[in-house]
Every structure is written in structure tokens, then in C-alpha cells.
Amino acid sequence: MNDSSNPPAPATSTTTRRRVLRGLAVTTAATAALCVPAAASAAPATPGARRPKTGATSATYTLTLVHRSRTGAPTSSFRTQLTALSGPDAGTSLLAPEAASGTVTVQVPAGRYLLDSTLSTKETDDTEHRGIDWLVQPRLDVDRDATIVLDARTTHPVDIRPPVADAQFETCGAFIEVTYEGTTGFANLVSYTPDTRLAHLGPATESGAVRTWVDAYWNRTVGTCILGYTFRTDRALDGLVRHPAPGDLTTLVVRAAPGEPGAGAATLDVSPSSGPSPSIARALTPPGSLTYLVTPERGPFDLVYASSAEPEKTPNIYYALGVGLTAGTTKVVTFDTPVFGPALDSSPGARSAAQRTGNALDVTVPLLADGDGHRPSAPLFTAATTTLYRDGTLVGTRRGTPGQGSFTLPSGRATYLLTATAMRPRGSVTAAWTFTSAKTTTATELPLSAVRFSPELGIDGTAPARAASTVGVTVLGAAERSGVRSLVVSVSADRGASWTAVPVTGGRIAFTTPGDGGAVSLRAELTDTFGNTVTQTHIDAYGTRAAAKAS
Image (cartoon, rainbow, N blue to C red; front, side, top):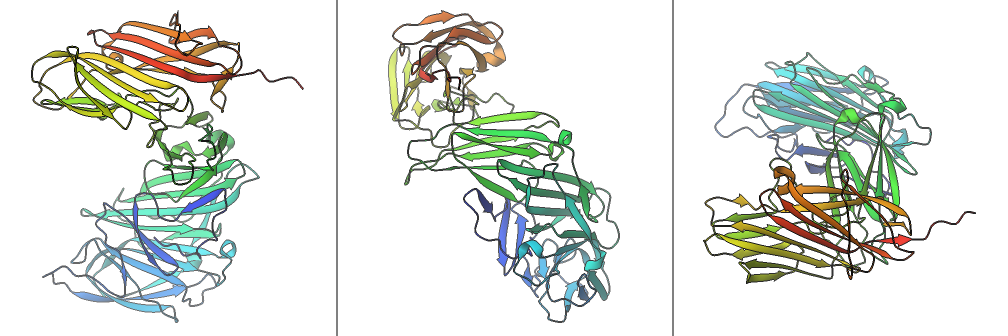
């Protein structure tokens, strides 16, 4: 990575800069750092050195690198790197040595190279007023001695601005990947100044061999603008101008429910799912929200929310990965809010929540996923048990992490009852599944189902008291695939002492919530078309609040 601006000042309480880019390995060198994706074949650069492969022989040539500033004068403020794409050094990088004159020579074997050079125009510690020029030559064929002039006057501006007046520039990342004959080279620039310029040097390379990602982050009081663009061409970029209109963006609203009493601020990281990007984690004090303006053409985004936690406690981390966005729409994602309960991933290739391999049964049900189905890394609970019965006889009980346990079973076919319970500071979640099983020859998924409840709640996780309420009901897991034979949903206002069945119509139930300070408990009894069952009980699933008084 060419991060040629001075390191930024310490982050404020509302923004934390992640200097290590997601998915990249980092080597720091003075004011610059080289970031190479972990799966790449390019090795970190070493100033003035090269790493020929053992036993390899090749003609060696001299490259003279001349660095010029925006005024055309020689400059010593440069960082220039050569990444070999062919020849005996293929897959390694060479960092040109420093030179007060701005002119250096390097010896390299014959081959194809990716060259990139960062020039810092203004010698000042004021990052915001320091010009950065990045010149990239994706195709440098070395077969003779040559002089290459790296002139900042050939660059063009990166002008990416959001359509809101209150946004302040934070950072911009430009990343390039060049592939040639099976070797991929990487280079990138992370700049903390809006005065950033780019230039392509040399001839075009093969069609589609160059991939480029450019992301600009702008901060606002209530959130962040993430304006990202991707390209697959045969050249590097000669600057980039993008001024998206409001209708070109997605409004992404991320809400966070209250954390543990006495806990501090949570953190939220929003970044593109594909390709490298500089990532900014922002502080979020729950209950609260942040609003992001995002370019959906960048593709899906990943959200990582680390809830607030008391000192000495492990924060609870939720992941929402691959969130799809559409221009001109608003997407709302809420973390750490009811109804907490089991969540099963039915997407192709997803890991089974429970499976049997031979006579070993392994259960890893996310029993306390939040209301949006996000699975917690450290769920909040006071006690948890997972118990298995075979034809009515206890096989074993496991305590610890909710919904997890391993058991050894006899080979013959039998009917099993698997029960998982988690006690929370207020309320509890219990799921009890029945199914038949026998010894398997390979890892075989067990037919577990789950029911998700989706009430309309405030950011504090409560619903209005004594009000008509509708709650979405969604079936996941085996019953989602095979079909539902029967589903009965019941509601309780007295913590499960009594239950009232309510019909499920159009995937929703309707009832009147209890009084102020009360709690709604929910129960679902489901049978799939093969006779497998699940009974889910959520005691104190969520609370109620008094209606706001008119002023």
C-alpha cells in the first residue's frame, strides 16, 4: 500500500480508523505501508533488494526512475514499487531506494512488471493540504535498460463527492490488481487528503487484466457517505470524477438497541463485501442509529457491529454480511434487539445447525440470534443447557454456550428429543425438537426447524402498551424446505402461566399488547410434512411502554 500522507491524528470518540485494511496483510515502512492480499503471490517489498528464485538465471537490466513534482522539479518525496509479474522474480516486489535527487536506479531481471509510484507534492505535516499523486503502469516490459519519468504533472484529480453539504472528507482508497500469465500483482493508495490525483502510464495491458477499486469515505455527524466504484479494464485510472445524485445512492440506516447497563459505546464497521477498501469503524451509543449514504453499484456491503460491554467483558459481535442495496431506497438494519431466538441458515452451502456423522451428533444452533437474525459471538445469557433424549431416555446434558453440544449415540434408528434452553437477564428462550435418526455414513443434516417472530419495536426493544399489534412469523430450516403440516402460535401476558392461541394469517399474527411495563411471551408449535416437530417458547420476548403524552 502507498499510504503517503502523514499518519492521521488520533481518532475522535466518534470515529476509529482501521489502519489494517480488511483482508490485507500489512508491512509498514516509514510513512508508507505495503498491503498485499493474504492469498496473493506477491511478497512484501524490500528497499533496493530483489529476490531471484533459486537456480533461476535471466538477463538483468538497469531502470532509471526519475521523479518529478507537480511543478516539474525533482522531488525526493516518492515511494516507488515494482512488482514482478513474470521472470525469475515473478510474485515478488521491489521497493526503490530513497534519493534526495529524485533519481534512482534499480537492477531487475527481464520480465513483465507492475510499477506504481506515489509522489507527495507539499512538504507539510498538514495532511489535509498535502497533495498526493499516484502513477501506475500496469504493463512494464523490461527487456533493455530504460529511463522512466514519473511526473506528477501527468496526473488527474480524484473528485468523488456526496450530494450533501455537511459531509467532511475522511479518506480515499485506490486499489489495483493486475494479472499476467497466472501471477497477480497488487498495489494501493490510501490517502487522507482530498487533493489526490491518479495517472496511467505506459501501454495498455491485456483486456480485463486490470481490476481497480476506488472508495471515498466522507463523515457526517449522523453517519458516513461511502462512495465506491469498481472497474475491470486494460489500464489504470487517469483520475476519477463522480458526483452521484441522491437518487443514485442507498440510504442505509443502522440501529442499535440498548446494551448492558453501565456499558459504553458500541462500534459499527460498514465496508464493501468484495475487494479491498479502507474501512472506518464509527462509535455508536445505543440506543441510537447511524445513517450511511452508499453507492449500490459497489456491490453488497458487510456490517460488523460490536455491542457495548462492561469493562473486562467480551463485546458481543454481530455480522451482517452481503447486505444487498438498491439505489433510491432506504435499507434499515437493527442490531441487538428482540425477539431473541434460534436462527437457521437455509442458504446453499450453509453449515448445518445440527448434524450426525456416524454415531456422533453435533449441535450448534444459534439460540439467541437477535430480532433481525444476526448471530451473536458472545450472547447475553445467565445459564444454558442442551439436553438430548433417545426414545424417552436421557442421553446427556451439556451446559455452557446456548444451543451447543456433542453426543455419542447408539447406531439403531430411534426418536430423539433435543431441547436447548437459555436464561437471559430477563426471560428465557427454549426450543425443543423431535426427529428420528440412525447411524449415518457421512455428515448428515438433522431436520431442525425454527420460527422467527418480527414485531414492530422501538429502538429500545419495546412496543406500545395496550395497542393493536401485528407480528411477522417466519419459518426457517427443514420446514421451510419441505413444507409445514401445522403451525400453532400462542401469546401470553403473564410469563407463560396462560396462553392464548392466535391465528397465523398471511405470515402474521395480531393481538393487543399488555399494559405499560408488561411483557409479551410467544410460543410456536410446528410440525413439518415429515412429522418432525419444534416447540419454541420465548418468555418475556419483549416489553411494553406507555404511549407518549402529547405536549
